Length: 271
Image (cartoon, rainbow, N blue to C red; front, side, top):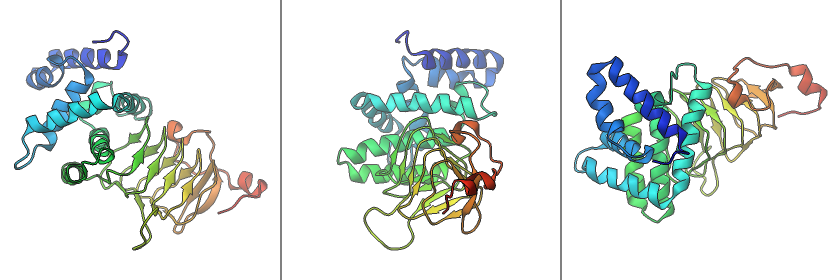
């Protein structure tokens, strides 16, 4: 274990403490974390156990996941950034062990990263099979061709959908019930592009090949059909500008309050 990997060191320490505090969980913690040499190995064990289904053995999924980690070290870096993002932004996250062991948003996102790796390397059928398992197990449907950055909080996650040509940049926070979808039967580049620092409230629907600008905020249950300027707050059905985001990166602030419309009117910006 690299002494520089503070995330894994802290997760192991959290697992040791949890095993002492709750003997009923000690066998699980021993099997998944305390016997493992790396976060990559622990995640492969935990997620393969979650997804093992019908004729696909758990051991085969573990091998697929470990091979993805070894072939593309960026997956491990993104996973660590996601863990830290959850700890930083979610007050329900007690320690670094919590998202890895319990939070299906983090687990589903990590499984998507394996599927995306497979898709990029031409293993289309296996990538789509993983997508279907992720949807069944976690109620999260992310197309393996979608492009997702690091430092992502997928909070609660149930009902999250991201279409084939969706893009989510770094340090974005998304709540449950969000759809990044198309507007019909068009083909080609047809899904939203979510830029850095965006916060998307629960139940929001963002439809079409539109850009949600850096640091924007999307109100809960909004239906967004047009591009959103950087640092704008939008809400409603259909969505319209209701203010300027009070924080440069709403995804980090996790403040869902609507903001001051007059400030945006003064800038002459609209949607």
